[in-house]
Length: 123
View (cartoon, one colour):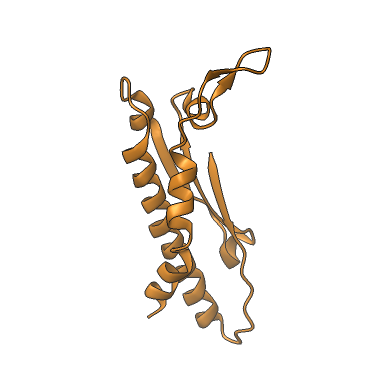
């Protein structure tokens, strides 16, 4: 599972400006998490397609109202998505199944877009 947490503080004096930043942060995170999830789906290793179909994402509560950080998560519910991502090893430490990462590379590729996505919503 890839989990993204954002925490921001402002020195804005008005509630409306704070809410605008909060809304932009949420929308920017949704855009970013959606891009990451779509890339993970497109690059998931495929034998039967079950893992690819099981990739999900969500954006958590966060913000001033929730008093918690805004979070996004991308994960597989296939039951073996983590094994695909990290590989498996035998008891002696030798590789049983090599890793075939698909979530982490997507995270690296699109995480840098989060600030840009937030700014785009603010404009």
